[in-house]
Image 1: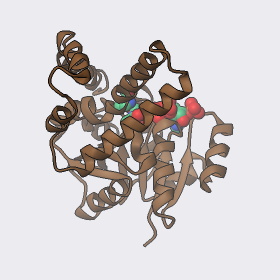
Image 2: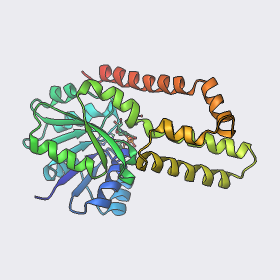
Image 3: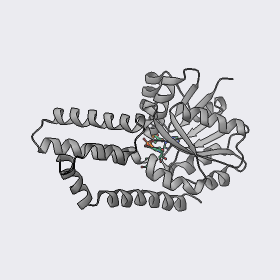
Image 4: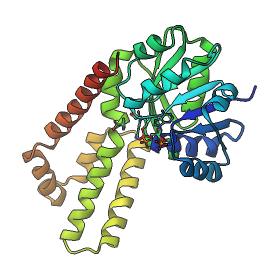
Length: 269
Ligand SMILES: NC(=O)C1=CN([C@@H]2O[C@H](COP(=O)(O)OP(=O)(O)OC[C@H]3O[C@@H](n4cnc5c(N)ncnc54)[C@H](OP(=O)(O)O)[C@@H]3O)[C@@H](O)[C@H]2O)C=CC1
Ligand SMILES: O=C(O)[C@@H]1CCC=N1
């Protein structure tokens, strides 16, 4: 049976998922709708050869509905979905900080999965956390795994771990990008051109990522192999230690998890 997926919301994460999915599985039929920006819908439709839809047409023709709107807009979408017969359909929400209980409140008995992918779905390297709602069948759970494992790796977790997962892998790509931006800035301050600094930093990040992925060694061991005693790397690492980089990273991730928890409070009713 052909997998039919409808994206409600056509922003960053919807496009990241669509661009990944259309790279690997041409057989999935994807529809997309948004709130008001028809130009954006047409752009996506042309770019990925999709069907730009209205909500009615999308719901009727999709077995999986992916809610990809900002958390504050989820209730509006659920209000609208209340008017449809959703029997047999699977809802997947990627909205950060929106708990399953909000879905049950608006759509009692609905099959819903809470997902937290990241934008690396685009390059098929997302790390996606999935929380299975009460009324999800095994077939629907497999279907969601099929969708997200096509664009990266999947980890099933209980809902209590969703805030932690969001703080690590959902928001995580932005932390790495910030580090990369900072290293490019450092290169320029050291006398490299912007273009040179960018090339050096980007290739170094790709290389380090591949080492992490492909070598058997831990990140700590790989770091030690670069760091000669009293050498150049050592001078830099000492500054990171003195400036408490590890503590800063932990503090930032905790702030992210806390915000996700606060949002769960805001969006649970
Ligand atoms: N960006 C990321 O890295 C990640 C985001 N998420 C989650 O994904 C969700 C979307 O984030 P992101 O893609 O960045 O946000 P964007 O602002 O880029 O996109 C939001 C989309 O929602 C649409 N929208 C708003 N209200 C409605 C509505 N009532 N009906 C239909 N569509 C509507 C907007 O349409 P219009 O433009 O017409 O207003 C827009 O297309 C958030 O809940 C976020 O927490 C999860 C993981 C990662
Ligand atoms: O910043 C946010 O709220 C969303 C959720 C995870 C990544 N971006």
